[in-house]
Length: 293
Ligand SMILES: NC(=O)C1=CN([C@@H]2O[C@H](COP(=O)(O)OP(=O)(O)OC[C@H]3O[C@@H](n4cnc5c(N)ncnc54)[C@H](OP(=O)(O)O)[C@@H]3O)[C@@H](O)[C@H]2O)C=CC1
Ligand SMILES: C[C@H](CCC(=O)O)[C@H]1CC[C@H]2[C@@H]3C(=O)C[C@@H]4C[C@H](O)CC[C@]4(C)[C@H]3CC[C@]12C
Image 1: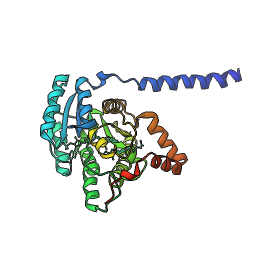
Image 2: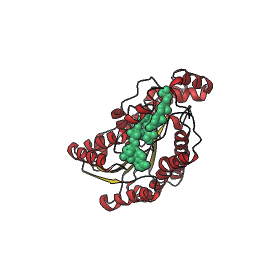
Image 3: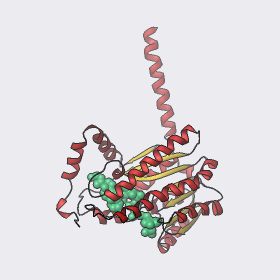
Image 4: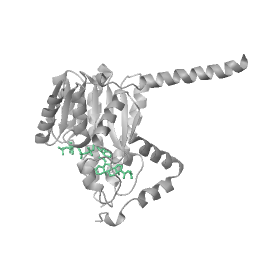
């Protein structure tokens, strides 16, 4: 009997745990139907693809970026794909007031918000740090401060809807490789801020989830243009990446690692043997093609 208890109870525990986690893991596109979603950086790249997925799922999308002409096309396509509604607000995230204005638009035109997807990123370079401190300041404003400002403005609506915040970050926000110093700094800042805020929401029993997305190299035009002469690896597809981000947000996951085995194993290696990881990364780069100022 004693032995039976020793085996039966843990086995039952395992079965229950498996059932609980697999049930939580079931994503259905209907989860997004009728949901009110802001996507930033939606004029190109991963943000544009997220807008199309959400449109197919029947969400109300409010899109933002700087380039009005591109946003108009994305909104048109979203409506063709079946969005419950699609609108845009154009402007720059260098300006905190603009970031807050976008959130107010959601309140005004959608009457609330279910998901805030923070994805935009300012242009930077892939090369040796050039000493330009103003560039670092500007990038922190675009890639970090505006994320904080939008979150702060959106929290009352997200508390009301028990919604989700999705923060798009990078491997460069967990592992600092060379040639991304300003960019990497902004992405590490996101981890610090949002991982701390997540704990506070849990302590206060506020049912708003925060999903931090740790992405590897993705085949967007800007990334391929910036690094393909140095990094020979094939980038992962932006369409699949966009869907995985939405799925992770809808399932209220703490973190997404995409592409999954590659990012996961690099993070593990960083903890176990950081020097080995550094040298493996460097050995795969075409260093002779790196920009020096
Ligand atoms: N592609 C990759 O390999 C990886 C990407 N990521 C992350 O994924 C996210 C999306 O990246 P990706 O799709 O490649 O980026 P893109 O360069 O393709 O798109 C960036 C978006 O941000 C907008 N944007 C740029 N500057 C500003 C600004 N000042 N104010 C408001 N919006 C701005 C752009 O539109 P506009 O110019 O019209 O303003 C565009 O919509 C980013 O957070 C990035 O860090 C993470 C790891 C890898
Ligand atoms: C090289 C890194 C991963 C290691 C590997 O060998 O797979 C890439 C992981 C994330 C990439 C960067 C990123 O986060 C997006 C930036 C977007 C900018 O528009 C330009 C390029 C990036 C700096 C990009 C460069 C490659 C990674 C660091």
